[in-house]
Amino acid sequence: MRAVGYSAEAAIADIIDNSLSAEAMSIHVKYDASERPFVAILDDGHGMDPDELTDAMRHGSGNPADHRDATDLGRFGLGLKTASLSQCRKLTVVSKKSGVVSARRWDLDVVQDMGKWVVVVPAKPELADLPLYGKLEAQNSGTLVLWQDLDRLTAGAKDAQREMTAKMAPLYEHLALVFHRFTQEEDSHPAVSIAVNGLPLPPRDPFLGGNQHRQELEGQTIPHARGKVSVFPFVLPPVSKLSTDEVEIAGGREGLRGTQGFYVYRARRLVIWGTWFGLVPKEEFFKLTRVRVDIPNTFDDLWSLDIKKSAAHPPDPIRSRLKELIQHFAGASKRTVIYRGRVTNQSKNFTPLWLRIEPKPGAFRYEPNPDHPLIQKLSESLDDGDQKHLQMILNFLGSALPHQSIYADMCGDQRRTYQDDLFTELVEMAESLLSVTGLGMDQILDIDPLCLHPDLHPRIKNEVGK
Image 1 (cartoon, rainbow, N blue to C red):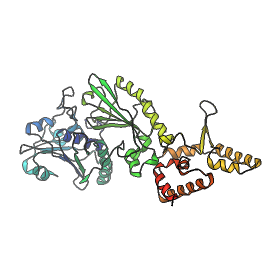
Image 2 (tube, rainbow, N blue to C red):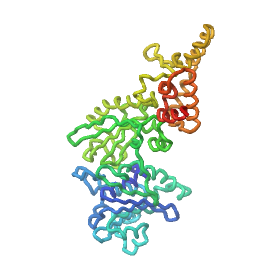
Image 3 (cartoon, rainbow, N blue to C red):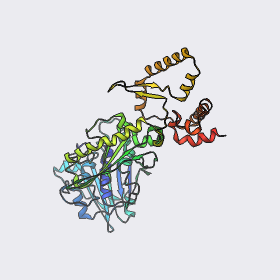
Image 4 (cartoon, rainbow, N blue to C red):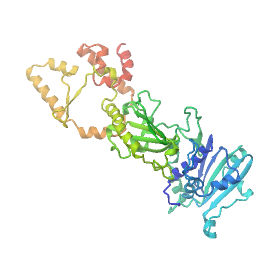
């Protein structure tokens, strides 16, 4: 039972599920890797009386087939025990309800010595020495979950403190992402405060709702006898429109390419993310697509939700419908990757510097556009012999275009920030085009590469007009 496969961050997230089901508004996670290491999770939920706490400590205390409230994040009645004992040998739960404080403990050493599952009732004087107990006692209600004897968190390590610190390193960001819809207001749901070692979780939004360049596509509702599945597709802005922080928020350690796909939420809690469920492969053109999928907790068995609530698989009817929708979602992402930074109403007048040529189906190449104003102006100033040389140079440029290097760079999430040197460079281009071509300002802003930076157009106009 201890080998279910919890990571430290997934185990703590499972405990927080219980706190949220208890309608907690404040949750504190504290861990200490010193000489007496521990992990403590304290909430201000409605708490449990002695009988409720005893039942909560029972393995399999809930039937997954029973009807549950729509906001209940539990399923098997196993999470508290399996998550905790996957990391420690001593689990103590102290709860306060209606002014009454009660405590129960699973100690695997006691279980092993006695040869039977015996829950321990800690003595009252012992509770005062427990981490965060003073805060629980000062609250009207709530529950404290304490892990001690952290054998799994430090297993096989020469330096137990360093090992525990390393395993807890992903915790902060993991909780921020999994519970990001709880830590901010959403519809009628108030924001819940969650902190790790005193640091509040940072706001996270894998769909970058605050970015004005994000595309929100038409949502879908997939009906089912058990309830409905709500699908909300989004296409993130091109990397050039993202700040460094936004790239980190949207992609994290796996990058934008690795985190594309479906984000499945069960009762607003993120269960699984960054996957297409094998319906399509992860591709560069799809890397900006994020699809939010909301499922109710009545779908648990249909989605093959595991004990850890970290894996799910859509049933065939919903899987088939999602597959039909993918190409529509991913098509918008492909257009965003290819036509980065181009405003829709400019596309008809857009003058590219490079042309994509398809000599036959399945083949393509890129060539400099001979109708680009600068190339055209240069050509007009040359005699026939020099014009042939110019055409030869353009052909060489197209043939020698480093496609593989460009693709490798585009697969990354690096971006060029709009710093003063870029703005100065664009102003110089605008001035050159104005003097050489004789076109108006609005016309030259439709010329590549100026058209790729529409957010800088007002500043360019103002600077050139001085």
